[in-house]
Image (tube, rainbow over all chains, first blue to last red; front, side):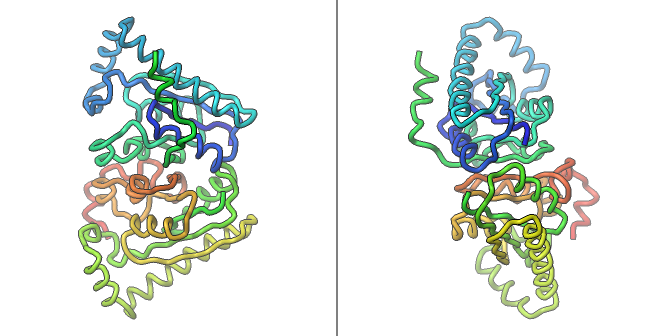
Length: 168
Length: 174
């Protein structure tokens, strides 16, 4: 397999993608490591916003402290996972930051990069959201043209990511 | 990887599954091939039936032609995949037939067999049902304790935006 897309966020659940990647998947030549910044936090609102509203939101957030915070966080998350992935062997890891609706950005990036498999954790949706929509949003599963691997379970020994990414 | 559970519904899915097994996932030592018989066809009904009702159905169709046809299909599908897998060198293949809700049986077998990974397509549901609840794979993905790989592509029923709402077809659901 040449290219795999791995979507990560700051949740503990997200770390299960590492276990899956190390144990269940044949090492690919390249990994596209994607983090999607959720501009409006964890509300369910986002799904109701149209493209136009979303781009207004993007516009208005540009240069604000909030956006800078998101960027810093994104970089920390991606650095963490990049290191972890690279420690497993000789693979190229390309990091990508997108903003908007996670499922849509995952699909868009998967298409742009021509990946052959998408790996995503169960994070990003919690409580009611999870109950209603499942782990990956329905849209990733429905819309994806390539197989989707949903990682499960958490890895305790790599704890500290949350602290690492959220501290400072 | 020790064990992978592959849920198969119809014979068309083999190209997708083969390429996943050979290229995407690490080589499994054991493969469980599972086929779940839907006793009442592709209606929405089954989701509303409780266990006791299902077991009544199970009893009442025992020995009927309908059940025999289901059994023949199960054997045909499972042998098809077993042969395909063996022809490319996979060993340690076990076939399992269950009756009932596909997603529930998939989860149950995965647990009983201690599978490390579940591979599912998007099959076993009518279009209306898929539209309403998503694929069986979604219920599996939501509730499974182990990773779930949702296969796509030829014959897996899920690719090509297969379950985009199509009113007319939904009403003709078998």
